[in-house]
Length: 111
Image (cartoon, rainbow, N blue to C red; front, side, top):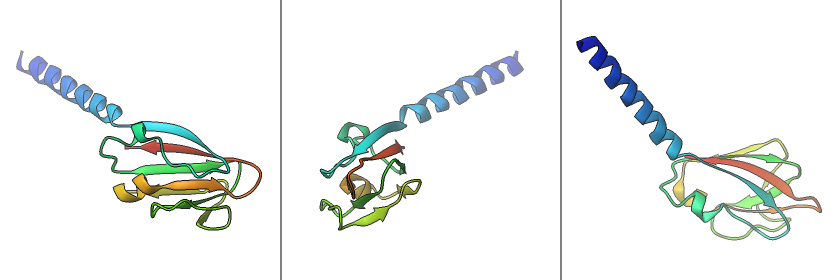
């Protein structure tokens, strides 16, 4: 009986932890066009401790100081590269814009 109780307790604990972890995860796809864009506010309203994004389709520029980048000003991110941060201020201030005629696509996960 004690073994069964311990097993049930462990299963409930592990299942509960998995639900809590999954509930804190967010994901979005952002199309980075010719107007600066940041992360969707509703995705980062909870205390986000990390953001990880990969870039597809086309090159972009980004800034994390609260100022909009331009097609020629800001950090350059190439197709296939990753941007990540564990700084809540940088995550909140992140803004990106495409550098050419083709929009970039950012695949982003937050936790």
